[in-house]
Amino acid sequence: MGADIDSGSQDHGKKSPGVKKQKKASAKVDMTPMVDLGFLLITFFIFTTTMSTPKAFKLNVPVDTEKEEEQTEAKASGAFTILLSKENHVYYYEGQLLPDASNFKSTNFKDLRGILLDKKTRTPEKDLVVIIKPNESSNYKNVVDVLDEMTITEIKRYAMIDISPQENELIKVTEGSK
Amino acid sequence: MPKLKIQKKSTWVDMTAFVDVSFLILSFFMLATKFKPPETVSVENPKSVSSENVAEKDVFKVTFDKQGRCFISFSTDEEAKGRVLNMLKVVESQKGISLSTQEKARFISYSVGGIGVPFSQLKSLLSLSEDQFKTFQQPGIPIKDTADIQLYDWINALLVGNDNRKPANVMLNGDNAAHYPEFKNILTAFKRNKVYSFKLITAQEQVPVGTPLDQTRKKP
Image 1 (tube, rainbow over the protein chains, first blue to last red):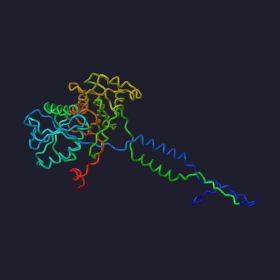
Image 2 (image 1 turned 180 degrees about the horizontal axis):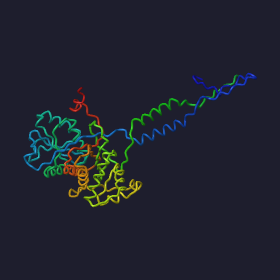
Image 3 (image 1 turned 135 degrees about the horizontal axis):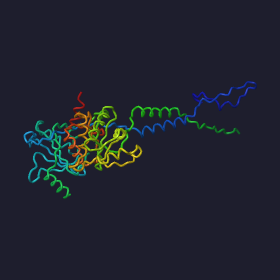
Image 4 (image 1 turned 120 degrees about the vertical axis):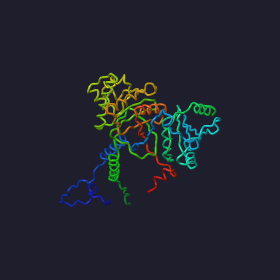
């Protein structure tokens, strides 16, 4: 029986008279309880522990200044504004918002990266500034996603600013018309 | 006619290999993981490409969930404990609440999971036993109304009590579905206390291939 040392159950057959055969105890150990215990501990550790350790995303916010001269003026040609709304809707416009809102466009998180990269290649680095304006109904995930997008596309200058009533109105009109 | 012998096969299965594997997995889990800290509120963090690990010492953490509840918590190291005691002294004098030594000790132990009550309910929260605390639904620190962001007072007390020494790690732990206005109010509460640097707790995500960040990270 292979490499088993055990012979406990096989020594029927030849019985030489007078020779007392020493009963060999089986070397096999029933490991079922051990396996049971092992798996119990595995399940315990799986349930009580966290596998993926959370990561820290650094966020530095600028000092709010009331003084006009201390505020950094964004060059219109390098400005890129992202507006966030409910249900992961993203809107954007380049430069300043035109009065007829013809440069106000709608997009989603998937396409946003391409648009940002395109803008990045078209603009000198010192002029490029991305303005993020989340509206009342956007959620925290959207904000972090956009900030993360800044890291991914390596856009160094970006700011989070309150949305203006005019932009809010535009979003409302766009969403209402769908 | 020779008897057809049907050999009885043993039902014994060699489980050694099985045991080996199971204990290997067991030891992996024992070594590779950490225990979950007790949480009074569960949040699902957004993802980011950041690869920096979350610090564990001298932490002041603000948690906010999708219902707009806000909680503060501290790490358990000695430095953070000292900060909490200093903060409570200021809270006592500013808010006219007097806390016993036992209540302060409770604050420290409960604050690991998160404390989220208005100042008016602080005293009654700290009178709860540990078992009662576990089942108690905290309403959260008021942050929704911009005129009454009580989180501001907590941060203020924390800084005033500690000679304006900021905690080394100010962390924001937000839920995916938390609303932006609340997040903004939390940032405002910090800004008004001249705290401008945060660490957002996020889950890790792979850097998308081909993006500028991906190219920078691949450079030797």
